[in-house]
Length: 283
Ligand code: PMP
Image (cartoon, rainbow, N blue to C red):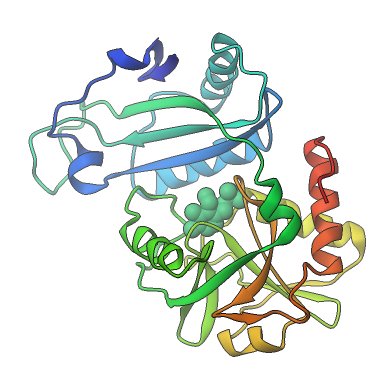
């Protein structure tokens, strides 16, 4: 498999890192997961823009311009003759250097790689919905950065899985922030609520589109956090992410949401997503 490494292409097996590497030792880096449908990127510009926002936030100098990385990611798909549904994973770290907390010498190049991976759509979950548990949000105060420091997210997702659930809904100070790897939405009386795009959540690329879909469908979407208690009385609950699309949540902490079936507004947003991404309707 051909991957992008630093600023050039190489074979996957040829990529090696010294163990003194900032991403490995400190999680000192950022990443993106970009959706591919039938060999074409979805929301590539939004992901590249967010990558540069994250880099600026951690004072990381990326070794390419937005235009260059955009072209190279397209080239990566071409080199791998990508025609199916998948993702590109891209990460950039502060490079390889002797371990010490403060930044390495200014001329230390960032370590960048990107590779393509097959990932079919989660049809069964998209159609039937998934279950979730609530968990305390113990992450840091800069969740708008797509940082490699994912230990709290890893622990929350593992807890969800051990409880037979798809996602962990994170709550902080009586408010639902987001999922361990997704954004969260509650529907009540035909009104959609989601946490505002502050430093307490990652502003999802799908989330940005969902705001437009809701506007197009003329459902009010208010960027206002809801409480974990409000979930019990929700008409609908759903999550979004690049790999999960618009995913109904039909059960939380073992209790069904409304009648335990995906809701009508969630379905309409799924249809809007599929139209926007130019993919087939599975519901
Ligand atoms: N929040 C978190 C914490 C995430 O990890 C993700 C997935 N990257 C999202 C939200 C959704 O972001 P996106 O829609 O860009 O995939």
